[in-house]
Length: 340
Image (cartoon, rainbow, N blue to C red; front, side, top):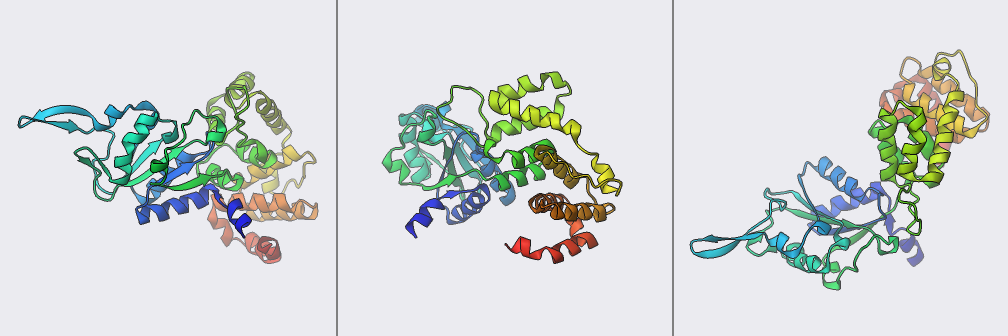
């Protein structure tokens, strides 16, 4: 049982989000640990948006102890401290301190009072302010300092672990290019592959693949694609991804499948992943019967995993598909697959 708990200590993003919400309700400061580029900051802002809270963010790496207390001024013949503008001014907000472990030790000590007593000199955090901090792991060689024990004892420590399914859901929710959705399924182990020992400046992380998505959205010059992606995720992944993109030229026309003119099943895995991603994005209630018919063809070809993933994507994009005859028949016939 102890081994089970140890294995489950790292949280995928959806579980981490739920845990943060519990900690916010309990008014317990949270420290989120994770590798560079895995989405720690993004998750904090997602939680804040879902809860309707304002985020006041500052980075510990940019501060010195005097920056926290602010400048002195004179009032009624006495000196007082003027709090810096980045500290919360409204009630029920979230104070988010990013890159906390990379802060100078003197800054970490200056934060003791703010995090435990919610005060800093004459300044007090507004009523209802919640505290969340984040930082990289020492094992990632991310220039972090060991957190002093008195400060560490003020937090509940949560550890973020990358999860392909959660990331795929995020891609769909944010209307990211379908090339990345297909790539996530084709090479799931290359989305979060940060290596602290690598000498390459660019590495594959969820953050850097998001940069690739932005490049794909605006770049029309295919001759530049490799150089741009190499500078974003590194040479090896850029070579493989660009080869993967080249396979899109061999993609069967998904519109012909969705209007019943074709039922071609590609033999090359990269093309099949891409075709399923395209079909999931293009399907609607009008052509759904052919979409689910194609799913049955994939099932007969021994490609049930592709069919299930394709339908999952389509339903997430358009829940109205669950009202179609094709989906009802599919779910009725294949209920055991989902149960397993």
